[in-house]
Length: 99
Image (tube, rainbow, N blue to C red; front, side, top):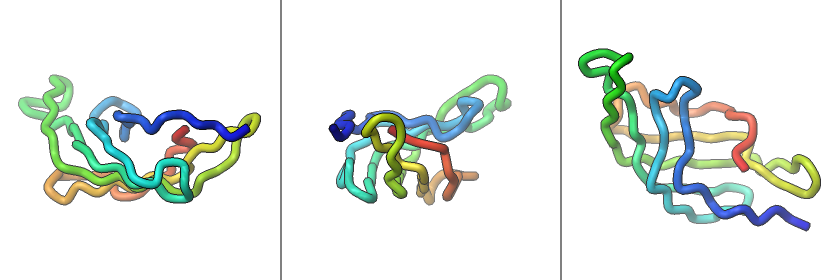
């Protein structure tokens, strides 16, 4: 049976916690490509990066390469984040799997 997990409202975009996507609303979830719109919360490093202060920017995330794993489950293997108003936005990267 196909995995029917709900679309996430939040996705981390950094291993060290300096950025995440939140308030995501989705179109195409479960299809070959899913597009989410929400807010990129990025550490603005003010006064420094150790004292985490987040600033929110409008963002779009595109998930693609829906890949089977486990016992009948699927996950997206690629994620592209676009947030033109944010500085140092990760543009495209592979995250492993986003269930």
